[in-house]
Length: 426
Image (cartoon, rainbow, N blue to C red; front, side, top):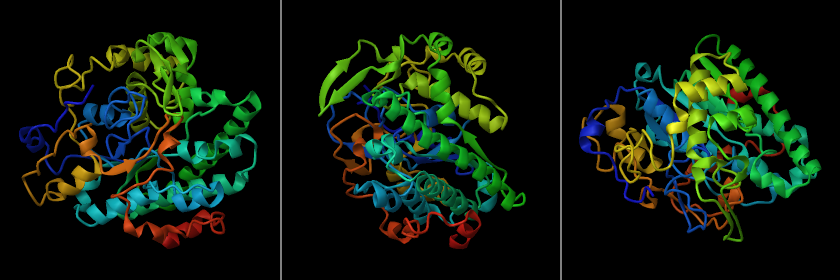
């Protein structure tokens, strides 16, 4: 599935000018479209994605005519230095801070300020920050203030950095409701509740801090909006929404593995909210895309059952599947190219001149990126699908920015720094 997908033709790429509005995404496996080259895994993710089909940002880019520049890496955290300092892990996959550094190294100063006014920057992160140390979180061994403040400061640092580059529109996808994912069923109710307490505290601080940050810019940025992955997964699991999606299960994963041995496999992954024990199916991604679109249109959009059911109907979400999909060039052929003008890190780097308007010709491999491993620019030795953090401890062999060490300012001693002082480092 998807294995024969190749880059869209030069004609398609030329049809999208460098002046097109862009969707720039930083994040983890909930957003990755091919930046991580995963090791062989028994979970049958489609190449380049941690799902059974296209990802939410691909649906969003297509429906709104955005050029998608995707820097998300499966296994990423907000900041490796910060997470490693209390987790004892050695995460090397590019974090959000690393991803933004890489983007700046490639594109910083190359876009005309007027050409990026309508671009949207998305930061989606947090799953691996929690699941990478899930046992410690589930038993309350992590200092709540330390984690919440450090996490939020790192995310907002990313917003500040991109704002200084001239970007004005921001969406932050908060930490998903990990209490409900199949992986969390490995813990007793007390452990799941403890995980949830950390996430709720962090998301609450993220929301209030994002609102405060907008005020400090005195109108020089348009908005920083929260697209709540937390609320979305909680409401999507409600029986009424699951029925509207034609799901047979909103709590189990279609594929579950242990020690890279498949222990559970369903007959049709399109009937499930979750493809594995962490990652949603492509139909779920399509619905979340519609939610993000609404949040961009209306900051007061509320993620409740009635609104999700309305979105399912309005966007014909039930027609989306891993085998038939309006993103496929041939909607009934899942080996056909995607109808999305999108770029992984590798392809974006190869097409800087075209994307910034200094060249009218894209390089080969532009347009819709190939979801095959050959389009990836990082390697992972993940051997389990237990979470998107299954690749957190894996080695990144080629794409991590050499300048990432400059962000060691976010160590344990500095995470309590007032947000107002954060601006000094930008």
